[in-house]
Image (cartoon, rainbow, N blue to C red; front, side, top):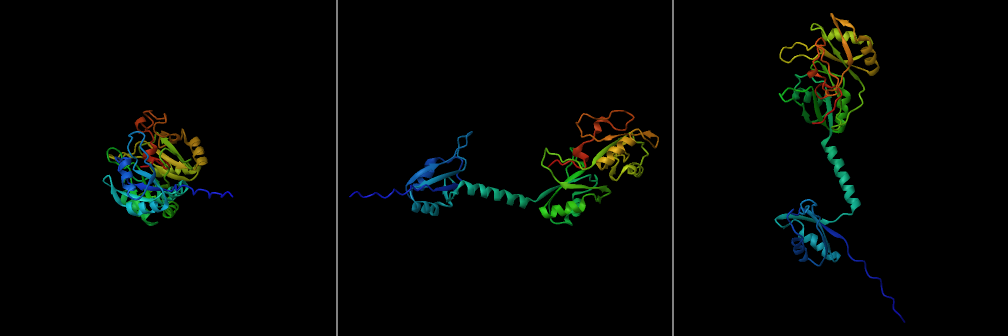
Length: 309
């Protein structure tokens, strides 16, 4: 009577992960180390496509579970090719993907949220800015960019834990610091722009005697003025003949329409939406009080611009 043969046991195919391998390592070095603890079924050492050198890790499959366990116990944190290698169970791809996701999530949480702070007074120091935000939680980082001459550019960045950042944005956006109304929101990745909730108007051809209060009073006839700012020369303190007024979109549209051509303190105002530097719209009229070289630069004075470090 024929005897049925038992099915063959599946081949052992669980790999060992070997990390922190020297980039100059060769397969024979690993083979020599692992062969002392059993029979090697397979070695995979991924190579860099450009250099042809090791990418710093490998996978080794032993012939059975016992040898697999022994190799991990004996070789973990030993030296191969001048480097201390780390040997452990090789995880399934889905587990590796899950671990990467968890790591990135934890890293993001540890780093916190970056906050953009616009419309800063040029005299505001990092200590002043840090102190204002410290009321809402621990400030991980505070940075005020400067130009090539070392002068502050009128905006800054704060790093805080997510929960503290949300409280700080809610508490400080629209408040005053050193006489300027802050625009505080989450910093956007470099190269992206938020849809402006408010519109910044350029007001040109101002009389040298026009004060911010008079200008703000004029624009308040058309709605709430979020911010009114007349840039001044850092050396002389004299204003430069133009200003920026920030308002809600509908109010700004009406104000621009009504005040463009309006006479204030003996000068005919030029009013339109402020344009980012390099947009192709600059004002070179000698009577405009606004030189093309001073074109409005989002990076230096935008209430909603959000360039990263």
